[in-house]
Image (cartoon, rainbow, N blue to C red; front, side):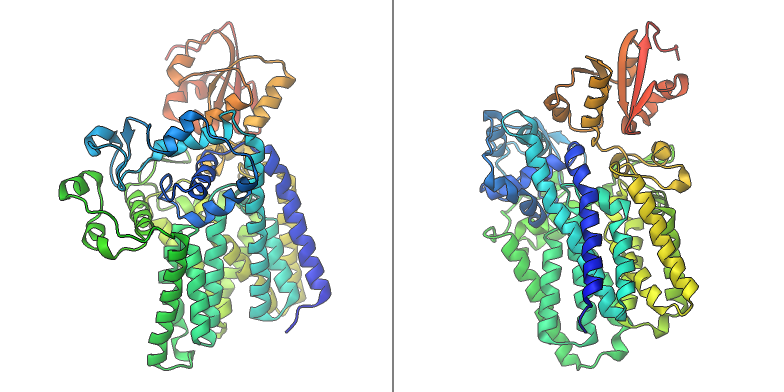
Length: 576
């Protein structure tokens, strides 16, 4: 059934509005902590240094954002070139599992070893490439970000046609699209050079195609779904969640599937084969097995036993290396903050809380209503309507079980799924007041999102008092990720402040690129300041060592809510 002309026009206008809401942040946000690393990794892959710098992330999304650099005159300084060709590097490195160690202890023959993970080199190479002074850093970041904007809009197209296909209701599809267009998390992470939005598109497309396959099994549908799975896995490794999601979807629809067991095996081979083919193409031509490694070095590096045992069969090797690194990261955990507490292994409540405080209250209410409705009418729902709720439950459950609690962006794939679920809910409501209530929630969300422009990374729900209170709940990529250096520069210029003491959670090269005169300082040295201006990022300020500052003096000003500015006028900090 064709979509009417007017609904297509309205959908297009909504997508245009989303694009416009992201244009400002594209240019106004400074590079966040990981963006220079992702962009430079993609550039290095295009330049022939395949899969060296960032094995923990698959290559397709990084190559995608780096494409605009092919038309630019990108230059490498001698130092940057020495990092990428491995003739220079840091004296320490990160093993596959465990704490950083001296490179000589782990790689006595040097860093030219396939098992070497150049994490610090990747970070400094990215900062030098973009902000080292040899290239137009702002232009590089902006052009790459526009690629991500188009990916974000593509997610919106997927949402619209999924709902349209599931319930044959154009207003329902427009409602679902509006919930995505005016979602602050989509606007925040959809314009950044990170892999989350690419993985979101890949995961969503794979789930939709698998649901369509289950409705009407066929070889070509299985192959198409497999290609989508392969693409998702080469965009973001969190696509491994598709395995349990597909298993539950298949179990739910088992009785209604009209095919024989022999055909299902054949379809499964088509799906797996297509997925593997796409992965092979993404990692081409690096198809040789991983080199041998001694048991002693494998133990020292934390290379898992399954990798060493099946080394010869794990092709492409860099793909399985990335999977191993992600699994290790999930097991080790990551230093995280939640509502005044710090933890290495996180909290089981982290992601539910993060979803609540990072979403407009209208979106939370709409999704809770949709979930309750889906549970109440589960048996009567078609698979295309059940699929987003199944996928959301599985993905959220796996996120809660993880020890890595560093950002709501890791939940980004469930946001379009929830939009689809709520859109399908609209089509099921019989009462006109209920339908209007859902559109009222969407309108409320739109107002909140537009009011938050252009500060979407630090957006926080009106339920907790907005972004001004956000640092009390979450930090890091949820709030203060280094995106406000340009706004700090404007603040300092407006007040003719020519030098600051700085504890900045972000890319220091971006501070130097903006010519902000600064002295980097830690919490203890800051106690000795007698005269001058001190600027502390929220992600640093909430650390225990800065308790004395938070407890003894209010900030003189705040820049974009995330940067706390203090003016010391001849008075040192009180003694502890």
